[in-house]
Amino acid sequence: MRVFDRIEQKLTTALAPSYLSIIDESDRHHGHADGDSRGESHFRLVIVSERFNGMPQIARQRMIYDLLRSELHDQIHALSMQTLTPDEESIVRTSRAL
Image (cartoon, rainbow, N blue to C red; front, side, top):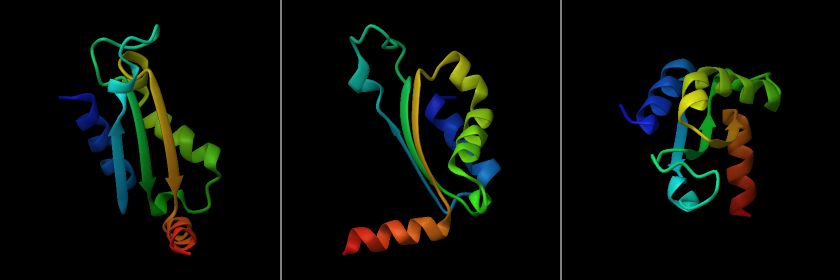
């Protein structure tokens, strides 16, 4: 199974997101000294989940890191993320519309 698919499966199962965007940015890192020639090494994700309600950002990120521990250990070199509650997503959408 591809790394992308494992990320999607784990996050969907554990967090039941109302929105999940996973972007494989590995192609931007070919040729870098720390690039991974196997591909699927750099990801950016945006996830909206009610499970984040009442949690500070650092706790949300730790949760994601824990869920993806094996992938981060063996395959993922870099992971950037935006973790939002549904209310926070609504605020972001409203501010972008102005």
